[in-house]
Length: 238
Image (tube, rainbow, N blue to C red; front, side, top):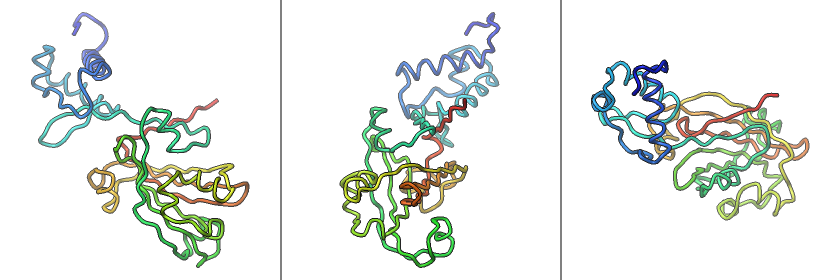
């Protein structure tokens, strides 16, 4: 650390650690030196080191496990929201291998709330599909989709295992997504989601509600629970 430099020491330490993460000196999920060890290595005060680590954690470079130490975080997946996107295609563009697990597939009748959300009649039948989306084997998103049965009369769980949902829509039913509306809210991981996502209950999450249309007809209503430590979303404003 250059103590004669006008750049604050905690920022210098942050840059040093980020460079080591980017340079693969520190690897994903590798334990970092303790606060005391960093103080000794860089001849810095505990306050300076702690501030640097707090900022690194806030920016998603590291994470802390109580009683175990500080570790290098996995790189977040940045999703651009200015155009329609497919999870499968976006992961492939990032050089990751996408996989999908169908956790449940059932036919249900809509209650009043869901019917209102989907602009359908109460008791109309839909498919309820619960899926887990993974990249390179790491679980990222817990999804619950509702699909009008009248549009996809012969849909099966096997169809959704063998190929992406939107490919099934296009190839088997000649239906494509022409537009989608997504709503985002911050939330916490719930008990039924945590085991599948491999995290603790009440960890931060982003909830995405997607309304996908074929022209003016709703063809999909999906509620996605994305891990807060894995995803970042960007919007370009012009």
